[in-house]
Length: 546
Image (cartoon, rainbow, N blue to C red; front, side, top):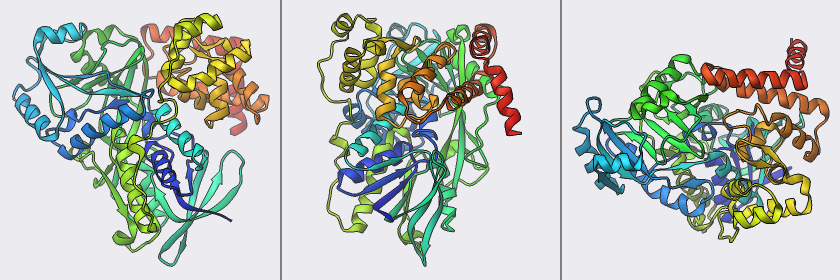
């Protein structure tokens, strides 16, 4: 019988950080995630590091949390979090000029740093912005690569002794009278079911927190709020650009490496598993994005996707934007008379560390452990100081300097391990993904170290397949690496992995098929059909499932 101090359910940002925090305090923990890490809301976010500016008028508590936490994340997660800077801009004749004074007052009250810009300064900073900008403020917004942030958080927890178990779904809670004592787990990779026991079970499943609580006959008022986002094939802005107005649909563009993400909507959903993208929502994102930059209409739409946010305190049908983005730690012993169960939900990706800190404080207090939180001053793996020079390494290994630059950019100090593999085995110097410059050595590194069991797992950690071709030119090469470096896969498993990945890419590309993106999709489908007969294999798979 496996026993732990704490069982954490949910492999998003908050769950991974709770595992890291509690393990740093000396507790024995296990993290359970029914799919891959970051497969829920965290991995389907806008990737925005909030300065707090978006919430200074209507949600001051969230604004203060974001302002403080964003500074901490820039210190402890430098290879996953980047301070691009941000602009809040009011467009003449469209945005309410009276919002300006409310924004200034809110920033001062919430300690959000800001600077007003002239029209000339704004256009110099961002040449592709709408020339009708009337008012502009600079803030400390940034971008986050959530997949890597979460994996590195879990990796540090594992290095400290935590057990990280992906594809492990909690199907029941063990209850003794009015106490939760453990969980029943289904391992989707091995096909077995087993039990775990602990002093505390922590429900960190975000938008699915209500479902987990229902296993203990507890109701939590959470409503999923769907946000739709569209990725375009160019980095129009060097900074995050927001509309200077109350939060609304399509009013942010976030730069991410060579692309940009336009978002987002807020639509209440009945189920956390229900998160469809519609053509009308994609059209709205493009239309609203074009108000920030007319060049949006000239860009190629690479992909559309959506994620559900957990809005705590909302009931089905309640307007999502009226609900605070702050978080709550629910002690079900005091709230519902059920001991051994704690829920953490709500919040933002930017505040995940603070959410985990407050949850871990409660666990430590209940266990009688005097151990302070140290996550705010403990850097994640790879964020340590290093002296890697991408030009010198490229010359030494005789590989493109852009490959070494991107590798260091993704992994910082941890890239040393990848370059060491390249030195030992020249075959690993080959490029697996040309869009994002990912080497075979990097693919091997994440398969060996970071719980990558599928093509989607590989791509989330490295960005391979997430570029402008959406896997059209690298899927088969990545599949070869998965077969070569993974110990558990047969040929049939790899073929199914390819089909699964193609289907996953299709979910996002099917809403943006026109002009150049349609040509790109036709090329990708031709590659898969002509090189690997995957159209026929897909047909056989569907027939076998029927």
